[in-house]
Length: 171
Image (tube, rainbow, N blue to C red; front, side):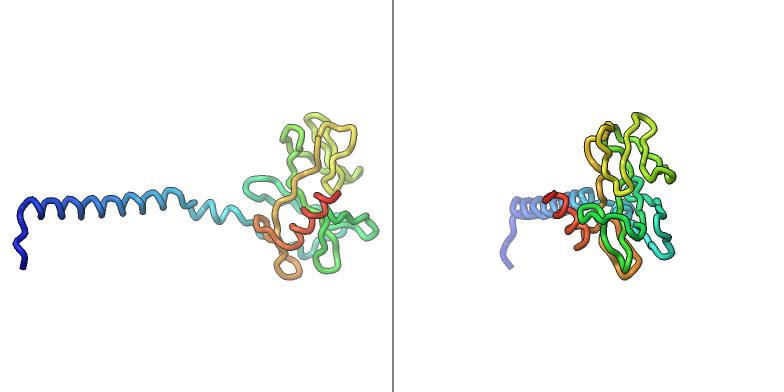
């Protein structure tokens, strides 16, 4: 065995401790950057639309934001930029936050519009802003994917969502 001098041993020991410390620091930094499991699970919301009647609105939340899903009535106009098909029915979906000042509009079923009580903003059932009211644009659409015949998963981008985005950019 080679003769190891004290100075060489101390240098190797210091290098080893520094290497272990650097690895521990990198592991700690990665754990800090990774989102918490509670945050990851909050990113997805599953909604089952089984049993929805025509014209019915179902409210849910996605990432703390109010989201509505409406089953379209037979004979309602269908907009590729705002509506999607699930089974034999058409639905529309939107984040129910006014694009004017961020208020949460109420659904007025007798008029079939969303009405923002703060500044009088109005949206159609499809979430499109009504001309002459303060909101500058329609409701935002959350990313979603269709799983099976009756389930939507909010927070994941699917084929239908991508088609809606493409149709709205072409409009």
